[in-house]
Length: 358
Figure 1 (cartoon, rainbow, N blue to C red):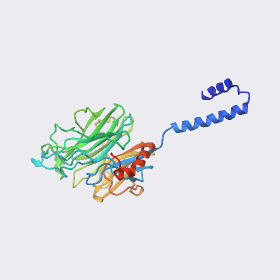
Figure 2 (tube, rainbow, N blue to C red; figure 1 turned 135 degrees about the vertical axis):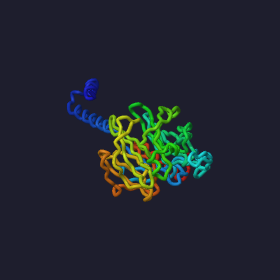
Figure 3 (tube, rainbow, N blue to C red; figure 1 turned 90 degrees about the horizontal axis):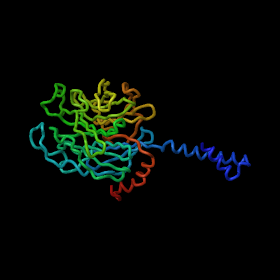
Figure 4 (cartoon, rainbow, N blue to C red; figure 1 turned 180 degrees about the vertical axis):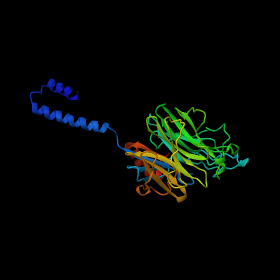
């Protein structure tokens, strides 16, 4: 079509008599068209890995990678916490009023980001070890400038003391966002399996939203019948979803495994074998080529680890293939256009030196 239009244009201006000139010009048009087509096929993307640094009081950190294996830091803190840890609370386990850890100091740990269809980045995070019944929320168009921080009180009507590790997932079928987290349950609701562990027993819950203004009531997302935390949801294909979660029945168990569903809201079944070293948590996954890489915090060993898988049934350790800065903790991986990343790199030193307001 393009060449037909160009031929008509040449005819109109009266240069079709020179066939060599016409051929030359059409080759130029073909080259330009090829370049435009190549550019439109997609801008190069960069992997970003967000995290906190213990004790999770300074704010949001970023790692970046071009291959999904080797990571480097973006300097500085990109969003300071302004909410959380502000309440003396009633502990449903000790049956008395308690102060949260780091009482009076805002917290940001276990951050999770997803980019919506309109290009907006949505961020959620844990705002307290105990004493809060919601998670933190903020949004950004460029990962540099952020909206006002808000607490989303998803468990306000529940007898729980915490909302841990909220994880964002965009459900493209139902065109809505899901947020999945773990909250403690009352001791009188413990199963026999819960009683085997030393920790407070947790279950995974979720809510959905289309606009981060209105949210559906919290529902139980996955219940294996024992203490479990740090869930991560991914879409492998059409009607093919994988949920990665941690069996948290310490001291005998502290391992990661996967379950499966044809619906993002479950039910999830068919648990896999455990993978990764014992005492691993905070899983997240990213597809690189034909393989899925599952990263996790091997916290007893003070390091990050990873396995690769193609089928989520067999898992191959790849610790010798990955590299990352020290201090990296629980977070999630997502991809951005290189132009977004370059804008971040441009202001990186200013942010590290606190010369611009974030």
